[in-house]
Length: 338
Image (cartoon, rainbow, N blue to C red; front, side, top):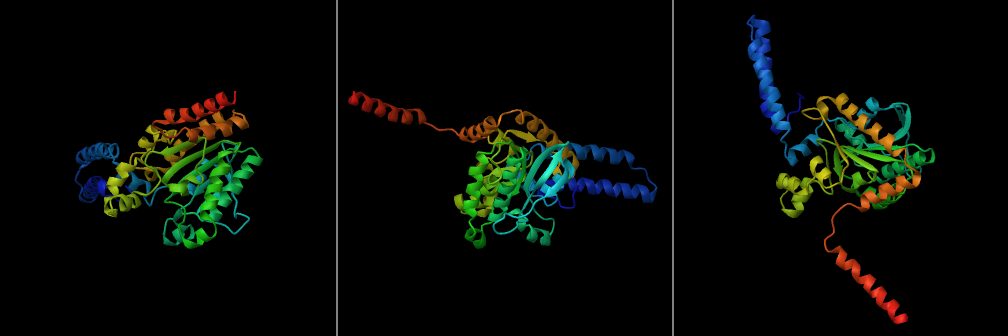
């Protein structure tokens, strides 16, 4: 288990300590505890399955934010070959919160873009905790346009608490940069596949998430607002984050049921950080399948498919009655003219 133990993982950690203690006693004291160790190992595996298969929404949010969870650059190293990073937005500067470049996946050329966080304080400062500035989204869009020019599928990895809300970002046009990205991505003529690998926070996530297929790792989340922010607004109590997480319907299963995402990618028991390579291989399998399928579509069909995907989200009640009125008025005007 990771050196960082979440609250709901404490029972597992306690069993692991007992197992380690018995192993030490067996090695140093010359007493055979192999039977007891085997029983505890079996009990631990059963407990892990019981806990991780029944996580609530807030617990999955905690796993999505786990400090040991793989980030974009970790997956790039495992999934892709020949990655060459591209820098700068050709307008203001570079943004380390967004990693972007060209690569191949099983010899097929693609473009890869994703949010990048840090492992320690200095790295998080360098990457601004994965919260992009306007130049980050402009860089991403510049690389997407290159992908379109050279007919390369686009892969994006989403993992951010949200776009950076600072004054400097607003001064440089944060809202405009994200809005432009949404508009331009919707019309791209090459396949776009997005994978939510951790946090999917608000417009910061959507800024690189207008895709033909949106995939999500089992313990990731995707939401218009963080549970803490929602709790502060709705309940006026940030401590009620757990209640907010449940109400927001932000887990992978909820999002699949709501047709916001297209597929859930399995993680190892315990989370992606337990076995990053296995998680990466699961992502790679899904990416290859969708790249193969989407690449057979025409440019117009690809753009139309993406547009319809987002237009068809949500349920509208009473829409039929409201839509019939303009038609009736139009018919009346035509009748009067005759």
